[in-house]
Image (tube, rainbow, N blue to C red; front, side, top):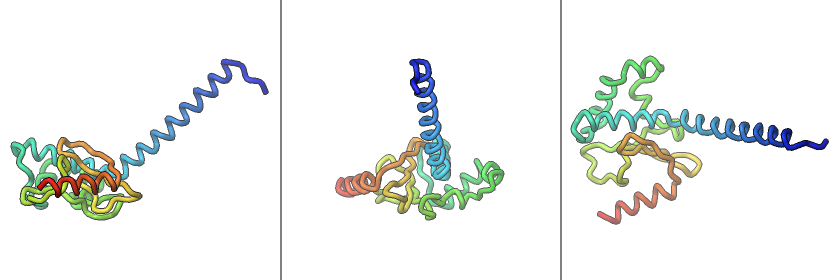
Length: 149
């Protein structure tokens, strides 16, 4: 079968759309896998804004803030505040930065997965963002921060 220019262009367009759809699904799955950490990042940023940049005193303080600001929304989604603090990647509670933690190992990171999965960890940043870092990047940041002290 001999395709003309129009047919080749149509096939190319379809292939590009399929590729974009597949990539979009992968991004959507990645988003769903760590929507808890995204929420933690957003609530942390809100906490800082409501408390003049002061970090949560401890886990209880932070959870009480989340309950006051978003408890109903979480309940509507069938989640508790405690559920929010669990990573769907490694099944463990997130490590969160609190006021009393003077030896926090990562700059600009406010929460991260304890172990991650498949050589990557998800981290929440101080500006309410979210990043995926390799285990190597995570360890090198942690070690660099420790060496600077």
